[in-house]
Structure formats: C-alpha cells, structure tokens
Image (cartoon, rainbow, N blue to C red; front, side):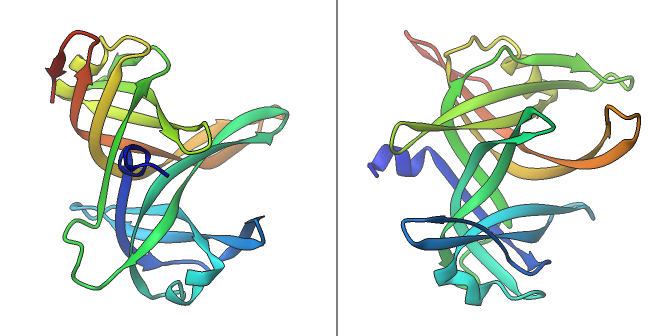
Length: 211
C-alpha cells in the first residue's frame, strides 16, 4: 500500500472490550473477528464501536480489558431485507502500548464528496449537515464514510460540490435510531458516523480552509 493510501484514513481508539469476538470472515487463510469496543466521550456518553481484528491479535481483546488500537475506518455493503446497507468497522492495523494515546477517539480522513450534502436545522435552531465521503483504498477500492457536521462546519460543508476533495478530523460515534419495518414493527438500530471537528475543502484551483 502506498504512503497516500496509508495516510488518507487514520483512526486511533482506546476503550474497553465489551463482547466476546465473533468470527467475521477469512481472507487468504487469515481469519478476522468483530469486536465491540466501549469508547468514552468527554461527556458521560459511551460509544460502542465495531472493530475488525485479525486472529493474530485476538489475545489483546479479552472481555473487560482495555486496548488501544490504530487502524482505518472501513465500509462494505451488506444485503438486508433485499436492500443494500452500509456497514462500518474499524480495521485494526496496530496495537498501541499503554500511554501512547492521549485522545481515546480520533479519526483523520482525506477523500471526495460523493453525494450532495444534506443541510437541516433542528427545532432548537441547531444547524446540521450530513455528507458522504469516498476515501480511496488499495486494490482500486473505496470506503464510503458518513460524516455529520454542526454549526459553523455544517454551514461550510453544505456548499461542497460532488467531487470536491475534503479533509476531516473528528471522532467516530454511535447513535441509536428507530426503524419502522414493513410489518409495522419498530426496531432499534445503531448507526455509526464521523462527527466533524475540523474540515478543509479543496477546489481545483485553490484550497479553502473552512473549519
């Protein structure tokens, strides 16, 4: 993997292993497992984030144990109820030593706007903007990462054009929502997204720093 692809999607997380690892898939004879990591915010809220880890690192992921990792936020499509659903997970590349990580949840991505941003205002007059970013990966693949911006950052991102290059620094967060099923039942689901702290948008002729 070249330098650019290694650095356009960087995640560091530190949290507590909440569930026993569950087998996810096998690639070239190597097994990978999904683990849920409990990561604290500065507030009292806890984000329960999915992490994909190789069998070679499983000894670090015992339930109740604290672990700090470095990796990338990956996406893939999964067919559910005959509809394609975007699934996100942090792919673990490295285990960090205790004390190496000051911020328990930070992500830096560089990619391209691939859908028109969706701007809205809450009943309490808070401005929000959702945007989907395509981040290049090795072997001609891309990860599609949903991001949410607030306030000033939301006002700037709402004008970003499809194809614009964008850099974002933020954190990964989990959010529960209610989904109404075809049979009328209401199901609680969890969504994952990048909460934007800082953002730069690049045009073809110049660079505009917007947050």
